[in-house]
Image 1 (cartoon, rainbow, N blue to C red):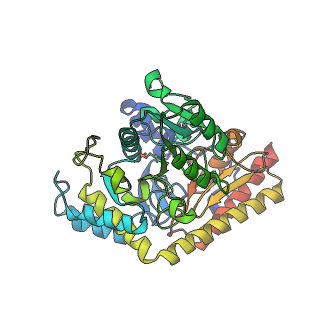
Image 2: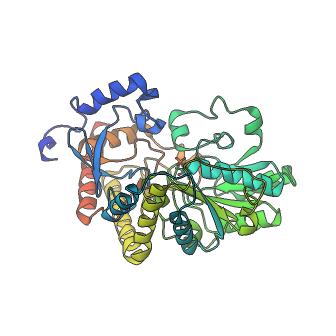
Image 3: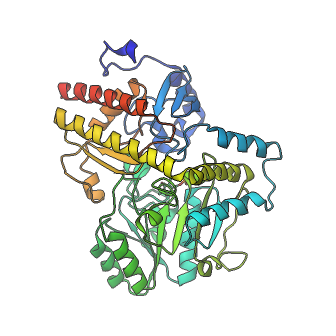
Length: 446
Ligand SMILES: *Cc1c(COP(=O)(O)O)cnc(C)c1O
């Protein structure tokens, strides 16, 4: 940090190994990346290529450290390469990496998850959040024998065809309203409602009586940035879906085990019929699951007619990593979630104080250790419409000014920042100091 103290944060970074790596990647990987938001399209510049991670830090190809607030998009709640996870992986690795047959690890992880989220009576392991939600929708349709689903503008549920309609984050960033390749047939069974607006949901039920299989949402959104449900919104959805014999599905791929042991359903006490989990439950390896009441889940093959399968599903390495992560979280629940809340609160209040002092119009939204900083003149964020008021250009400037100081924020304004238990008090202090400097420079130039 000291070495750049005299230099403006607006001077572009000098050529790094990442630039060369990105050039080479672009020759053979589409856009140089394997997932679009990684490309820095929405903030400009060259994506940083990382060599390794340790605790709260990532290290690029030139060994420059970055305090990481992306954490593999929230998966790494214990930070990078925690001992409990790497030890479990070593132990599992030497026994073989995949059997295509049952292992005890799968039952152990399923038991641990269902103990933390008791309304889950049965679960099915899959490899990604996308797969979990896609499978849930098939199940919801198979179970209810209805075809339509309601999703919310700005919510992201992976890249399944039915969800690439008014989706968040990557899709927002790239300005793809509905992706080419998604047929009108697939899109027509997806109805769009507004987050925090129960009347927009009721309208669909009135217009399509007996046709709606499920209402699907991120109960706390992360993929249009963090937007919190207003009091009664989730309970109103619960009551309405029960009235209409439709299923309520929470996509907690991001919030599961992030906002507390279990997730939003446990923290706010609203019980959906079906739930998708991912990210944290794989502890940094590809694992996700879907589950719910046994009576519904028993419609999945081999017990029922709804087909879903996977060569690597329940992979032993992914199960071992998830088990180690969730065991650590459950064993030290109060301590870990207490620290996450404390640091989240400090970051939020610190950033708000800086914004007030510098007169930067800004809203910070947060639940526990996930938060978003919106550069907006609005005073709160209720739904997607509010979110689109954000100043993407200002976020891009802020992102690069922070990156230059060794703070790695999400490379898009429509994403959540995450904390891990490896983030220390001093890291939060440093982040606030860097943010103060970044925003001062941005203000003095605008
Ligand atoms: C990340 C995410 C997904 C997709 O998960 P992948 O593992 O990337 O397929 C789905 N829903 C939500 C809420 C997510 O945050």
